[in-house]
Image 1 (tube, rainbow, N blue to C red):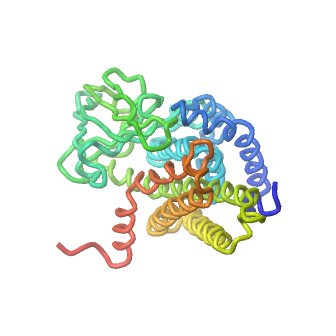
Image 2 (image 1 turned 90 degrees about the vertical axis):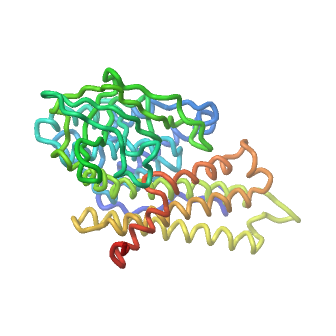
Image 3 (image 1 turned 45 degrees about the horizontal axis):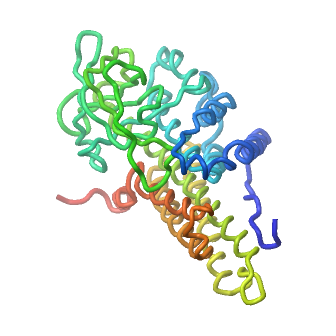
Length: 390
């Protein structure tokens, strides 16, 4: 570590248990995740064994209750753990966030019997989840979905296609929103669909700008039959369940974004401290120092914003507006910081031999997933001024 090099992020954890958890995650990331991140992203390899290890370590269920095997950690802690994982490799951090999102519907709206049957495997049994809301023709306008579930005796039969599904084709279970009634948000119901259900298939993974190790694919439902016991919540409640999950999920994306930004800042600090030009370290030049200062300030501001929203959530207070703000600000920050990191590394930053260009490509998707940043502005404005007049 150089004099001007990166320092570990100082975190104020609320309990000794949380501090020990942070130490465990940092060690795991340093030993298992970070060393192979670049190579596996380049080859497009999904690290399933890492997720198995995370499951066995209790890291796939941190914000859920202990009754069914959850970690019983506040969101304030969970999000900081997520940031550490994303800083090591976004495929892992985002994958944990998506799995947590996929568990949300059952954990918060499922019956006692449903939770007892399914949550232990989802929390610590090695299962991996996916969340199915978007469709080819309904992304931001999710309530316009066409995937339909029709009642047939004690079963439901699902037909349709979901799009942009993280873990599509490799997930063990899918939380699926499907239309069971009239058009609009009140005609949507949530279902828990096993990954090996007959009639369920996935298209080839999308060829993405970044996150090559994380499969994103369309998922097809062709007469997929699920029993009514796998319906989550009431008929017609699915869209409300989906939005509730997304409020929390957006905080996960915000934390991942700050992790990516922190990793980029660390790269920039190490490079500019270790490289000399005109007889002195690059980090001695005022223009460079000011860029680094701005990057660090933006990261700290984003971290404070997502933690403030998390503390509201932990206190049981409304946090949807703050979650949208955190997702918006943190992901824009990640894009700005990673772009600046590439600039500070100069020609090296533009090559795949250094992590900065990968971090820049990965940051872009965070401005899009789980509600584009344009949609976040719509959400924030509605909280401030009310819905738009028609």
